[in-house]
Amino acid sequence: MAKNPMQKKAQNSFLLGILVTLLITGIIIAFLIVKILSLQKQEEGKIMVCVLTSSVKSGQTITMDMVKQLEVDRTTVPSNSFGDTVNTIDTYSLLDSRGNSLVTRNGQLSAVRYDAEGQLMTDDQGNPTYYPIETLDGVNYYYQGTNEKVELQTVPIIAKVDLEPNTVLTSGLVQRSDDAVTDDLRKVEYNMILLPTQLTTGQYVDIRLRLPNGSDFIVVSHKEVTLPMVAGVDSATTISMNLSELEILMLSGAILEAYQIEGSKLYAVEYVEPGLQESAVSTYVPSTDILNTINSDPNCIAIAKKGLLDRIYNSHEGADGNTVYDSMKDNESDKRQMLNNALQDNEDRAEDNISENLQKEIETMQEERQNYLESLGGTY
Image (cartoon, rainbow, N blue to C red; front, side):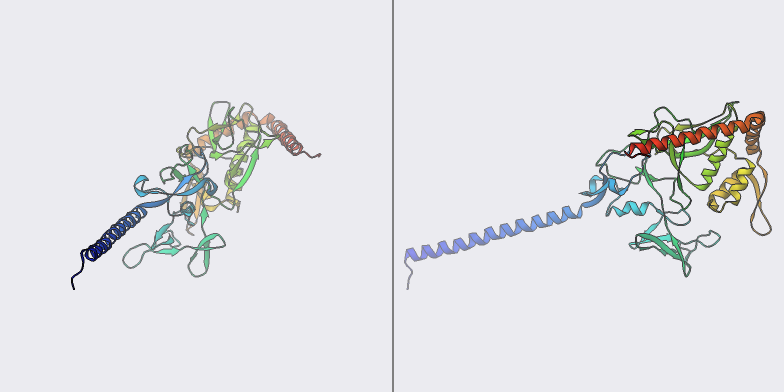
């Protein structure tokens, strides 16, 4: 039976509608697929980076509260940027017991293995072998041998140059500080050191000893200073520094000799760009009494102690394998002789100078302590 024109037209319209609907649906599906693929591609091009949340000065320590994570286009940041997690910077600050940085192997943080003589340990193919790093209660460590647990040391991370907020942190902008957090590190206050006029908290200094004849010695080097606040104002005379036991003894010897030698000066000099400038080498030669104290002090780190004594004395290995220290090296002997001569010239007044200056030191410390307590609002 033939369809009438109206039925045929309606059927054609219905089929055309279905085709148009299918076409539009196909276009939408194709658009969504392209969009999803585009988003996936963009997502693959993203990377997490660590950026600063505040300004940082050259030489200033960067702590975790100064850093946040940000997702950015991979092509817009250097390949040496710190990424993935903020803990990357924590990892960068860790060193093994020999002062070596750690490595990541198959996603596992590891320390290179050394034997008792300090030789690199390798496998049958000559490749380095590693200790896997473990973490317990926030402490990172590895097991050396069967049961010897070795904790990793944390070294402060400092900025090489001045950095502004939102700066992407890279390994080229930061470095490990020389001041590793060791068991013998202490915060020590001094008020007998002549300070630069514009010294502020966070700056780095060398402490030097100048003799009346113009000779000048570096006692301790590249130390970040803190000026205690008294009644809301920086102290004009007192600074504090983090020093090792070895550095405390060295500086104590220099202070005593500065008191003994009339016309000498113990003073601080600032670094221009502490993040980029390396520590200066100490040129001060302590007295024999101080050296004997250092050599017998169990609180002095063995490596630092040996480094100091090797610098000052001619040494050789004894029959028992231990280091034997002989006469003082010529250049160190000349430096020490300058100090001894200055001390000899002031021998008559040395004891009076020490007593007088120690009394001034004590009075200054007591006065600043009293001012500080009063600034807290109490009565003492």
